[in-house]
Image (tube, rainbow, N blue to C red):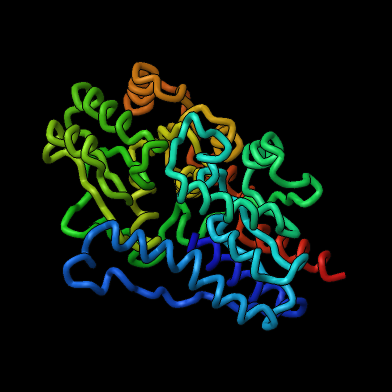
Length: 358
């Protein structure tokens, strides 16, 4: 969510300085268990420190800062517990999706221990208390309303945009396609995002295995995330054909989008799907799951396949890679992407908060 914070602050300062003064509150992360030599490198140490910071340190920090601003904006709903310590009626929250509350809203689908549910309940309580709740898509709004979480009158649609680096025509040396030790030559599929279950990276890898039999020179470039144990097992059959990239900057990512033969997003659930928009802004062809949220973001210029249907995914990707599918021009994809902008995102949020202050 750092990108959302960065783009919002940038546009508020550049375009709304006559109406708003922007300050960013980012409490320092305090390591506790991670400092212990016998425990600090374990994943559990980081997760425990993160929980303590979110639920103890950050609320204490913001309680001390509640007099430093007229309005507070929580950029990520997973920090909505901060609403409890900030002035009533003067806090808004951006809700990206409902994943953080799945254990409460759909307990049969996501079973969690009691302590985890208690934390989720505290965060959800903060979201419910917010004076305004922003959301990225109509699909997220529909989910909020379906579960009766927030009065519809307090919901405001403020969709994402794409950063200026994501464009069809590169500038300067942005077209360098050297990413780490790997040069992405030849045709490749591209996936951008984490490796959590709902991203369906398992389907991505299995589909790639099939596509390799039809297009022997094809490679897969995976940007972001950490492989799970099950995904690593699948990778043993794909040795030398998959490039995993992490920690790259936006110009390098934009170059990967521009040269991808196909961007694949097989997620089974999303709140927005920013890589779809970024890819289209770069003119890249996109194949994604047939979800309402992806239809909202990709419109008629993206291609769709049923969630989890391996045969449909390999067939659709084969048509795209083989040139037999109806192809929208790169210009059409870029034109569609222009409907979304961080400038408009900031405008909507600024207007909403100024309305609260009247």
